Amino acid sequence: MPLLDYSFLAKILPKAKIKKGYRKAKKSYLNRVRLATSLFFFGMGFCFSTWASRIPDIKSILQLSEAELGTMLFALPFGQLVAMPFTGKIVTKYGSRNISILGLLFYAFCLIFIGLSTQSWHLATGLFLFGFFCNFCNIAVNAQGVYTQQLFDKPIIGSFHGSWSLAGFFGALVGLLMLTLELTPFQHFVLAFAFVVVIILTNYKYIIKTKSIQEEEKSSYSFWKNPDKTLLWLGVICFCGMASEGIMFDWSGVYFKEIIKAPGALVVLGYTTFMISMASGRFLSDFLVAKYGAKKVLIISGLVISSGLYMAVLLPYIIPCMIAFMLVGFGVSNIVPIIFNIAGNNKNVPTGIALTVVTSISFLGFLIGPPIIGLIAEVTSLRYSFAIIGVFGVFISLLVFRLKIFK
Image 1 (cartoon, helix red, strand yellow):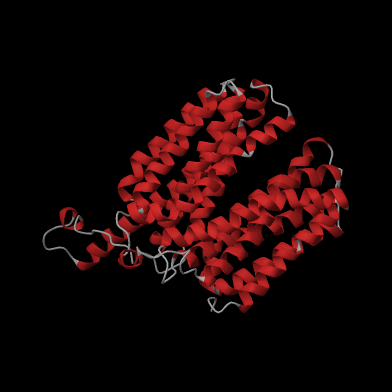
Image 2: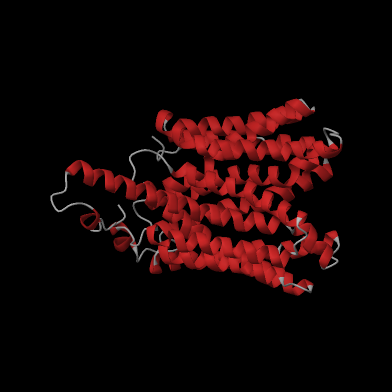
């Protein structure tokens, strides 16, 4: 259990404080901790969506071809991969609170560096650093999510990931506003950085300050010397979930354009319905876990993912595919919050290291899934590639059903 100092309550309550008043003040403080954690997740999602909203403009400013832009974009995941081997150790050593604050600050600052790019190598360097600090921020903030969850009797971790998804919509809307106002990417990114700084300054006091007692006892643990098989299997489950998620991010629009033959602006309906469903599902995740348990929710989520993908394959029409992509969004929405929470509460491995292991494996799914779709589609067709990836959802359900860690 993370250590929190409640001694401040003595200052805000009367000397002859009533227990009920003390409990109320403590509850209020814990809710403020929850809000702070949610806003750090929001800030992280806002940074990513802010960058994504200006990709077309940066492409035009630097006069990059599609192939050149594609090459530049690889710098971001490369930066994440470089940081992964030692992120867990650093988060464990210096505490997720410190790394959350610094990680989010530098993550947002990298936007300014990207906005200043005048040559392709500037952009590549900025994206590498953006990915590098993204990984530190991701592990540390998710560790904070796990610690905050431990303070509550009911599931709340899904709402944190819901905040990240919500930030995606907010960042896209802000990006649209910046385009309307004809602000350059640099000006936009400076404003975004200032917004994130405000989030940090108004919430850092409520980020959990100390590592748990168990973390101190496990600080000497080395995953490479003594790998935990359970974490590997949890990573595989997340791999399947994030591969399905990555496919929706990169290929839903293409599917609506080439397979559904959606006219004009209706091409975006697939991606939009997926994102709305995923964000909504993450806010519902806590309720579902509390009522039905993590095991049942994960098994059903896996089946829902497969059902959605196969529905899109069998019924390639606008309305059925919108429903199909909503199913996929709802299915993937539950995977990461539940698995990350289980991994972060591992009894033998520090939270930072456990999350690094699971994140590293799952990130490969997010990175490899979309290219696999392209390769399969090149040999067969896009519909067949979606059908093959649909097996991932069934695989999630089978693994969850067989693993003893799920009760």
